[in-house]
Every structure is written in C-alpha cells, then in structure tokens.
Image (tube, rainbow, N blue to C red; front, top):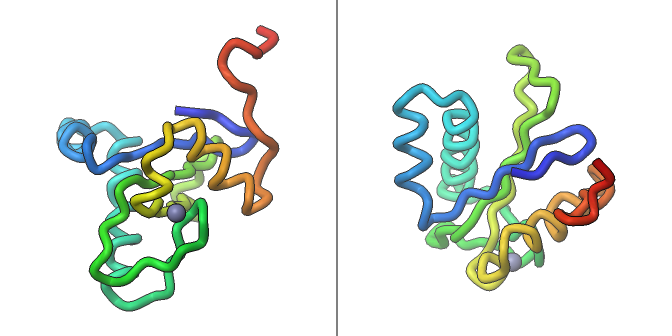
Length: 123
Ligand SMILES: [Zn+2]
C-alpha cells in the first residue's frame, strides 16, 4: 500500500485475488472496497464501456481480464461520496512491479506527485 497526498493506493493482482476475497469475507473494510471497485470495473468492461489500460492506454476488449488493478481510496473516506477509483492494467503493464504501476498510473492522471520511494523518506 502506498499513500499519496490524498489517496491510499492498493495494487490488486489476479494472483492475489483469493487472498483479497478471503480478507473481504472476514470483514476487512479496505479489501471490501477494493474488491467492489474491481467488480465495477469488470462490469463496465463487460458492458462495452471503453476502458483503457491505466499505464499505457491500450484499450481493453470485453473479453480481456486485466491482470492487475490499482485501487485509489481517498485518505478522508466519505461514505456518502464514493470516490474510490480503479485502474485496470493490461497484461504487459502488469508484468512490472507494484511501484512501477503506482508511478505510471495515477501520476498520468495528474492526481498527485510521485510518492516518496522507500529508503528515501525523511522520517
Ligand atoms: Zn497497459
């Protein structure tokens, strides 16, 4: 998990899907939000909404299954204004590690500056 100025960013990979679902079943609020965001994304894709890979803007086909997702949850979570954001990552992009995905995804949207990398934080 990476915290930018306004969002916590979680990387969900297909390989970790069962782990996240198990967490959600135990009532883990973050896991629940992440999984519902991913399900919304999948629903949009199935409905034929134009959906681009979060990193490279390659369009997904409705038959594509993104191999990884970035889920952004606002630090100040307001249950009345659901602003959880989700990016799907195509197969190529998801080959990179989590830090790369975080760097490439939301930064392009102009959401927040690059987060400090581990080892370079001042505290
Ligand atoms: Zn991509």
